[in-house]
Image (cartoon, rainbow, N blue to C red; front, side):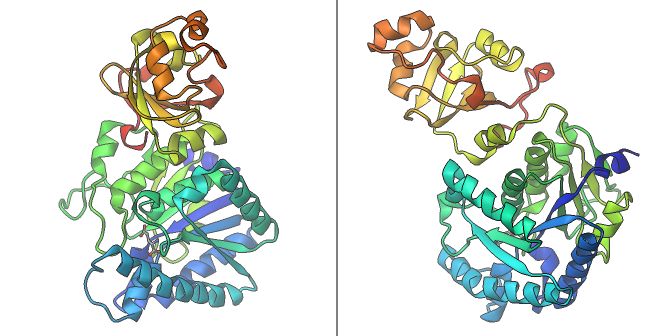
Length: 388
Ligand code: GLU
């Protein structure tokens, strides 16, 4: 019942498909790709909009060059992506062409999204492509992305794109049936979890870190991505990508894969961007009173609640607010630089001018620029320290 209710109003679907689904011994698996494209084309006929985040560039390029085993260096991976991305798009273009559908390619790096202006530009482009009825195929711009600007894996990229396009549902097609309570490779008794309503420690533990030899993410990164996407109010499904007609099955409401329900009090698009797209430049330790004010009362962060400043950041930079023990609580954009906050921390707002000689803002972080990452009922637990 939960499934049908959750999927009832879905019109815009983001499908993410991993290299482990798309590639085999012989490089890109054309049969699987045709099968996936048929499935997407049928969704289109049923009136759904579809955006595709597809991996496969590096794996395909590597195969083209006849390289066995792992690629050794980042330049090798980037070179392989340069070869494989074109091929990947040609294969998609041919397959969608048979259904009379056009494809558009969008390659993104993290730095495209951390800049708010570029973020909004990309958003406009993606919405135009949707309006034109084109199937947009997105991948990381692997050939230019270097370590600190890399999304890391396409699970994360898809989570960011879900926010940009305001998807109603994300389907992550992978090489397993979904999320299991134990790693199915280790235990025969492992059971598929059909529904996740909350990110309990058991759910976190169920996802192992390990990536497959082909894909980069592994189950852990899929669960982390599900956490981000559901925090934005979007349901998330991990499903078996090689099963014919899997997308139809899902949209028919069948119990396929694992469905993660959206969180009830989700973040707005801008706050989601602050929480998950931006990289924190420092940490502000806050006292219990400020923690309560941020989490339970929905207030801004004032100087009086700050007890320690870590890092060197400037006005407008994203920082993580942590409690005295260092547990992340929220992330936001600061109105003062680190040096200034060191001078005014612990003080009443009325003292700011006296100490600094000026006062542009009352708040260290205004509420509108603050994404709270823990629920009022779980004050002691942290939702997702890794992504803050
Ligand atoms: N962007 C990479 C590719 O297309 C894949 C990243 C991933 O597997 O998550 O090959």
